[in-house]
Length: 460
Image (cartoon, rainbow, N blue to C red):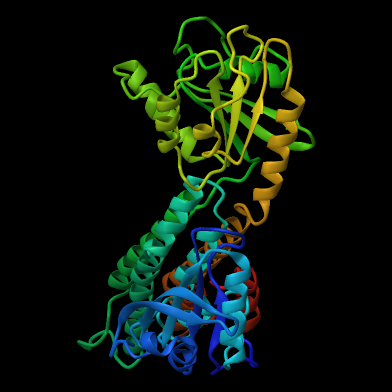
């Protein structure tokens, strides 16, 4: 938290930039309620709830009135443990900017990147792993990355670290207590019992490390997945883009069952292009297994090439296909088989509305393929940003601290086996505990926290 805003009421636009159904402005701090009530028209302000609540009415932005829904969340039962207000307003950017300017005129200060989440962390509402999960969530480039962030946010790592830490604390306390007793005294803990507890603590640290390594997103190129109905032309399109026959192409539907992947450079952007089995909710037997494999490929996708047959488009079926795709992943509609005499000239509006862009192509003649390559490159570049890099960096930080904790624990175990003084054993255990505390943010240096929160979006 910047020194300039500490103790002040912060405000920011918390919804994505650009037009949308609604814009969300968030305020947090001691003056949040007063600032918003001042800006509301009197009839709306008069209905301000006594505690947590919601009200609808009108917001005076200094130039006019906007319809508003106000969410009132008094501290400490809020994300930041401060008084928090959210204004849900019309999604036109000029109106949202005017409303934000108004709350700043009334005394709020602009929030810095990640400042809402940092206040939640510093107030003890969340630990550092859950704060980092927010960053992972907003920078996720695929459904798999989003799910990994959700696992971190739900406390999957924190609970495992806590379990290991509890054992380390207990071990250190036993070692220190034994310093005051001889082997014949009842307060003395035998070395065999301590070694058994070392094994238990080591297993807990190893479990946390294994969990984080499984959760961490895979390194590598962005994955572009071909999807669409069986026999829509996905395999032919993959072969045409790759310039070689990587996928089997036959008139029969459903010939792709295991998925085919090719590493390509498309207009300067390198990616892995995958031909997944066609979407078929009626599949059974071995074809049903292929559908499960297709689902796994789709969840790891960073971009979908949604292939629709221009000669035989079934708009209703195609629209259902989109509903089966992860909503967080952009879609490029590929209107294929454009060389056919019975091909329609372009996709209907009902389909175009589901995609970021659409391109008409013919895998047979090559028409439209260069435009498709450029569109893929552009969409991958637009969505690259922090894709996966934040998650990988944070996972590496967690893994490094867990490995360091394991090393300190092993150093303590060896010292105990060599009958070193128990105070030295206890100090090594304390060092292992400090490594775990770095993960939760309890002993994390301020400059590390600054680097983590600087990568957040403003408004988060």
